[in-house]
Image 1 (cartoon, rainbow, N blue to C red):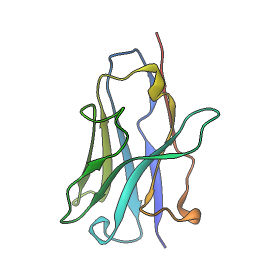
Image 2: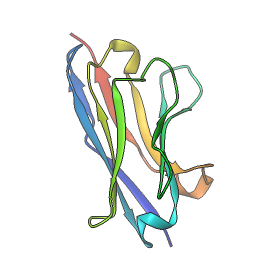
Image 3: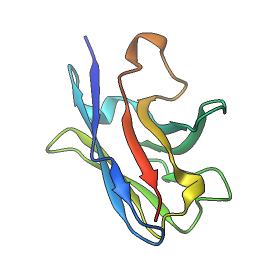
Image 4: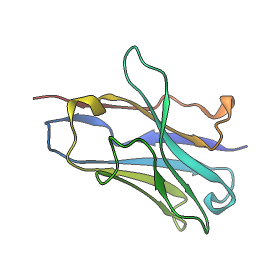
Amino acid sequence: QVQLVESGGGLVQPGGSLRLTCEVSGRGISLYSLGWYRQAPGKQRELVATWSTGAPALTLPNSVKGRFRIAADDDRNTLHLRMNNLIPEDTAVYYCNRVPPETPLWGQGTQVTVSS
């Protein structure tokens, strides 16, 4: 049974950086297509970045291109999202899940708040 646990969020000032981590347990990370999603207050959840073995890593919303980078650590079975030059509009709860997502895999997420 696969489980995904997110961590690494926090409060950061505009222009700051954070690195989110998704710990994948149950099976090897290389067996999946995975993604980082986020849900801002009052908005629908959106896919931010995707990763899978042998395919280019993608960041999807134009608003994060060039600032966010997704990467995987096969040895540690973890998925990361490096976020640079954060802006207040990045404030959201960030989740990892498969792509496309599976309902049972939604976890608690990790809160990212960008504010001065």
